[in-house]
Amino acid sequence: MATQQVPVSEWLSFFNQFSKEQSGKSATIEVQSGGDDSQRLADHLPFVGISADLKDHEKDITISLGGQSERSFTHVISMPSQVELDNGSLLITSENEGTTRLTLQG
Image 1: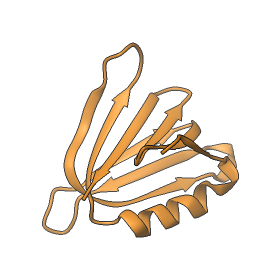
Image 2: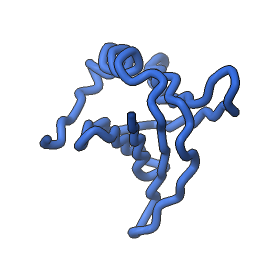
Image 3: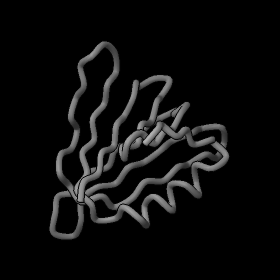
C-alpha cells in the first residue's frame, strides 16, 4: 500500500471515519523528533480515537488510547503540518514536534 497524504480540509472527516473503523485495536505511539531515534510513548493500549481542533488558527491533533478498565493515555500534537496513511500506520508531522507514528494492530 502506498503512502496516502490526507489534505487538511479532510482531516476532520478522515479522523472521524478512522476512529470508527479502528476503535479498540491495539495501538502504539512513537515520536521521532530528529535523527533516527524514536521514543515510544504508549504501547499496546486500546485505540479510542483521534480528533483535530482547527479553530482560531491553532491546529491540534489529539490521539486517545485506553479504556474503562485500562490506563488511559492522551497525546496532543501541536501545529501539525501533514497527515499521511502509510502501510496501516498514521504519520503526523508537526512543525515543532517531529513525526508521530500511530500503529494499530488487530
